[in-house]
Image (cartoon, rainbow, N blue to C red; front, side, top):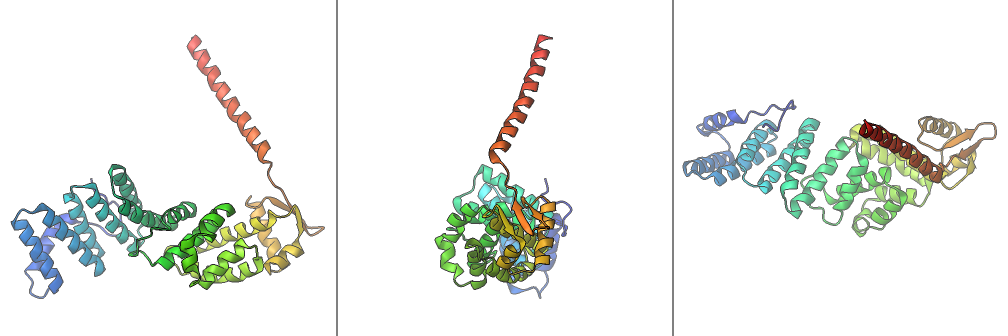
Length: 341
């Protein structure tokens, strides 16, 4: 069954043999491609299936480097069809995911990520699983699943080896940005703020460090100052650029929620001074997030006070138990009536 449907590029591996034979006869093809075609012919003449597969992968790599992604996909597919083990199939699938990142084709990426997960159920060594964690995290960023992306990045924090995707500094940047926007404060403290891998690099990234430290240390004025720089960084990022507005909104919710958790009530003036913003701006922001159910508080406009409305966790648990208990009791009663009949 074909791995590709309705993609930005239309793979045609069955035509690749004809194109390869036609090109091999041309005297002016690049020397590297000429060598690869010669190796392919030797493997084919000697009925060397493994050699054919390996050369097809090399040819696919060559076209990928030349940014001829359609030809790259065709050769990777031919190699995949000749792959005998799960490990080789995983390697080729990871190469196809790289093609998907190059053209930002979410259909291709979704199919290949699902294919890789399926293959890892059959096998796959630690190194391949470790590399795939980073690939999957990048895909998760593209589809706006920031929390799972953060968890993936944190899982490979001490063992990152996917430098074909991005540098270690960029890896730390994504780990921090995804963690801050999606994880609880306790997790950020233990897994990010005090992580030795992050501490060893983040000093070379002053903007990221200020952003992390200011939020964690509740220095909200400095946080909003560094937040502007982070917005520019996110807006220009190849994986997060399309989600810059969403990320910005979620980060502001995180900051406002963290501030309000410390108070039962606080004046709008005091909160505006803490964040270094104007009263009108803060009032508009809070009203929007309160109306969307993102902040558990209410604003007393007459007295200029924000009152926190912390949910009663114990009462919520009790209501859920009663609700599910009633549902289970009804099901048991229906079952009893059916058995009586």
